[in-house]
Length: 207
Image (cartoon, rainbow, N blue to C red):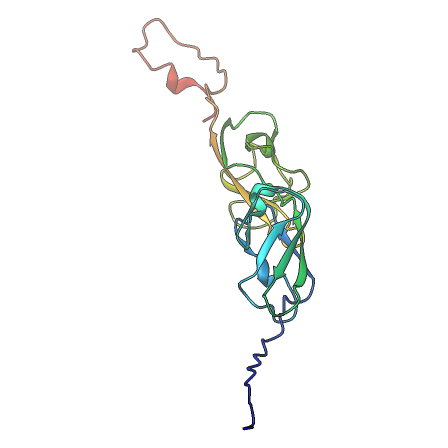
């Protein structure tokens, strides 16, 4: 009998690599975070992501911290194939509550008005603990307590320092100071009935 032969073709698939578990801190103002960038190693693309904490802020492999809000969230990445065992990695994202300096404001004051707290001119519930600078760009001597009689009018900046991955936030207050009316100072004038008419305004003292 003749020899019989058969051919067996063996295909060796590349091992799957979902990368290493990783973590990242982001600010709640950030809108798009690619989760593959959070994983360590060299993760292969093409896998699937699961929203382990049901944030509702995951589309494909992109997480929206601004939608999830403050907290710590986990996402599992799975690579699978018919030939090799699945490989998984977990991305943990810590969303920080970023600083809030509030919304820009404007205030009109009289030069004789009482001291004014500039933070009261800022909307959007600003965080306390920030610092103020005056229109010349130097720290405000009153750190937000404006003295209409002596402080410069103009643009005052309120800065709340950054936290972790969150940058500092700044709000502006434009201050306008109107000089108080000045009627002058009293004066006594002695005139004769035969004197020519004269201006009483010119007889007032002061400026």
